[in-house]
Length: 149
Image (cartoon, rainbow, N blue to C red):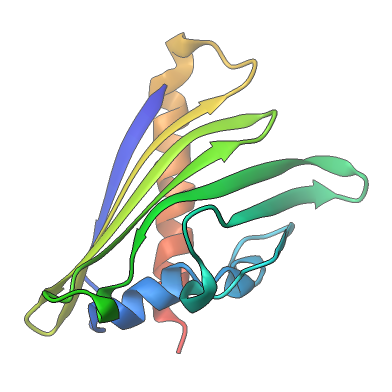
């Protein structure tokens, strides 16, 4: 299992950062060749058990990244302004977990994204390569989502 962490400090509140990262409707705008489907796609609508699918494809060739929300604490509903989410991936090609934490800091928030990812058919020997590539891709996506106004 490849593992990586992304640490960002956007100049927005934890509630805004949380909403921007988990506003799934925005993901196709910042992730090339990807569409999203699911019953709940806004951060405020997500709840434990929510399922959604990110489909990355060029024409008919692609794969589905199926995700399920396992735990969720909205920062605007917590006493200390912190928020968190845990998701797991259960598609045929991509498996793993995502842990998102947001917390207040002077001038904005701290966003911590920890992920374990396994790509079917890729040997464990290549986990370091998968981690570097995935960290770069997810880091770019998170920065783009956090910049959205």
